[in-house]
Image (tube, rainbow, N blue to C red; front, side, top):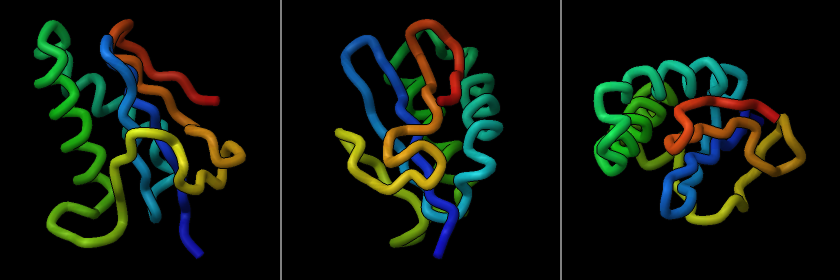
Length: 100
């Protein structure tokens, strides 16, 4: 049971993956909001990445919790929407969000 999905967050130096257990259906919209929130720091990748990840965790209801969301260095968590590949790509290099 759950609503599992992943987002790939692309940076100039590689990707970080975000996994949500309960909010997969809202992940595309949340990703759009996260990227926009990071707009003032688009030219400073570490800060932009932090803003995006912080927002995704907050919106997943997983802040200060042991469960509900996670971070991965490779995509191996379950994604119910895209056959276990990330459903959402947040591209911090080109400043866009795409869904698969």
